[in-house]
Length: 178
Image (cartoon, rainbow, N blue to C red; front, side):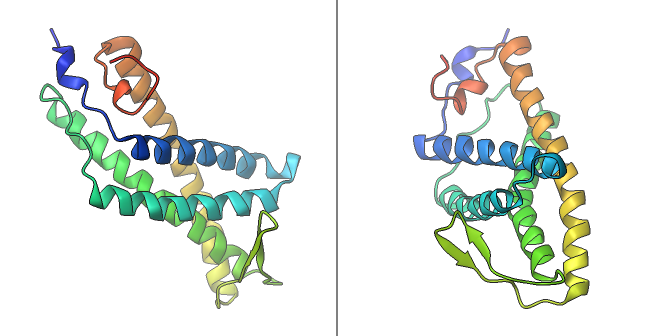
């Protein structure tokens, strides 16, 4: 039997705020990206992407200065490896997705500044069309990878909450019991 006390070490409130804010923005932006032909919203997609990039930079800074709570001792080695690989790949994608999108629009036929919610203008990167084409292809491929990893992450969280009932999800969910 799993000792539930082993899984109660929580992330800090700041880490939780970063996690849930960025998670919501990523999910919204994946939906906009996948449905942009039907719903439009590319200006919003770009602004949210830039927000994810800025928040991820702040989150990584926080994460490097504040260690994550250790995984419970009962966590199998394969699960530890999968969790670490998934988390660091998600961090990489939260940086790469906005950068490849910015590269794509910067190397487009008429590069122009991107509006950040009407509050600021973000200038295009000084790149040519080839870099823009690369950005487009990379952005699309990385988007599908991001969607797959988000689904995997949610499935793993639900596995811990519903099947294992080991309190693991409560480490990052401020309103859940331990």
